[in-house]
Every structure is written in C-alpha cells, then in structure tokens.
Length: 320
Ligand code: NCD
Image 1: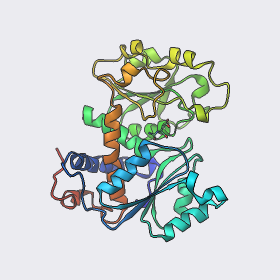
Image 2: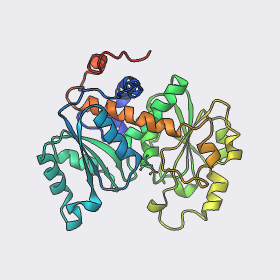
Image 3: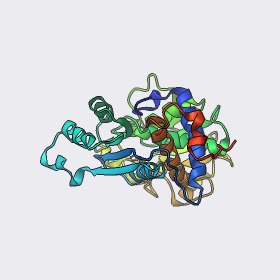
C-alpha cells in the first residue's frame, strides 16, 4: 500500500493488519516515554485546508512518537491566500523533502489528486463528504478492544449520514469486519441512494437502539448543510438525539462512540457523552496509536513489516 485514501484501499486483511499493529502502539503509548525510533529521519507534513482539532494533533503526535519530524501547513496563514494553486502548494512542500502528507480538504477527491502529483505517501485526513479512513480504523479498534471481535455485532450509525465522511468510512470498515450496520437518520439527512451500501436504513431510533451493541453518533454538520433540511435543532434532538432517556434503551453492555467535535444537547446529551458506556476519550487515545500504525506501514521502515514490528518497536511484544 502506497497511500491510504479510503478504507477500501486496505481490504479486510489490511484493516486487520493495521489493528494488530495498533495494539503494539497502544502499548507504546502506555510507556513512561511513549516514543520509538521507527521513523527517525522521516518527515510527515499535515496539510489541512479545513479546520480540525483532534485529527491534526493526533497525526502530529503519532508522527513524533515514531521519531519522525513534522511540518504543519494551515491554509489561513499560507500563500494559498495569495492565490497559489493546490498543485503548486503541494509540490513546493514536497520539494522540501517530505515522506508523507496527511491531507484534509472540504472537497472530496483532493487527497487522491494530491497523491497523483507527489511521490510522498498520502493519507486522507478527511475529504468532503467522502472518507475519513483513520477515523473508521480507530472506531473499529476502540470497539474491538472492548468486545474482542466485530463479527456479528449490531452497529447503529445515527444522525447526519448524508454529510458525513465518517459514516462512509465506518460503513466500509465495520461491514468489512463482519458487523451489521444500520443507519438511522431523518430522510433529509440520508444519502438519496443507498444502492451498494452494505447497510439497512431505519428512521426508528428507539427500535434500533434496543437491539444495538454499538451506537456511533454523528455530529450534526451545520456548516455543510443547506438550509431547510431540519425543522429545528430542538426537534432534531427530540427525534434523533441520543438523549439520556433513549440511551437507557440500550443493552447494558452497549458502547457509545462519537468522532467529535460534539454538539452536546443536540445529537448527544452530556450525560451520555460522559457516561460509562461512552468511548469518546478512548477513541482519541486510540486514534494516536492507529495513526502510528498507518504511518509505520506506509513509510518504508514499516512497509510490509507488520510481523516484524515488535523488534522495530524495541522488543515490545503485542499483547495477546
Ligand atoms: C470529523 C471530521 O472532521 O470529519 N471529526 C473528526 O475528524 N474527528 C467529524 C465531524 O466533523 O463531524
């Protein structure tokens, strides 16, 4: 694998390999000095054309824990503001000598376009409504860590599916690992055509929750929405929010995930986000380890060395 642009680039075996390697990196993260020399001398740049808190910091932390150097590009303070084209921007950055670029852009397809222009490995950090593969990998890892396997688990993805790259990547990853995915959304926030999606769709949130092992709550993406898709936030919460009362319908061992940033009191109640079933902060912790695994697999030293990883990590055996 040269790039990670979509979950489909990995296939089931590739996903399994990333998750296996992630386990070793979770262990590295728990060490007193959570750093390994695996990517010393390599440079990773984060190119974010759209805002982000956790994804960008997570990739930068991941790169540093692998001893890579990092550079960071923000459109607001760059020559893009002077009209420099995307192609010139990325080729200029590559000319400084970078090994991997993590690209986030509001338009679908930009990371793939960048991959066609540069020799560096490209990781999609979220493109438009299209994909956010590392988010899906960390979601799968976080559930698997608690439940052992995803085979046969019933996963509900609730909310603004239409505008969500997280939903698209989660559907691909969870179904590749054997989970049964149900989408729950108002009709205006479901993609108009679900042909070819390995999912069932429902508008009955309560009925779905009683038989779900996992609920992934999506952010209501107000910045991506045209007017008129929702009557009001209050009504949205009333019908599709994971309120405290609704969360009580879940089986006792069900897990609640949210990719962040959360609109507390809209798609999820604060008590649920902070409650015992919530994996929200564990997702963030695991996100660093997943991104270490991805960078390690893409950047030479780790390429194809999944099995040899423990030696490279300084003798740490992956936990069984
Ligand atoms: C998501 C994103 O930007 O795609 N956030 C994230 O990366 N954790 C989800 C969102 O913005 O709703």
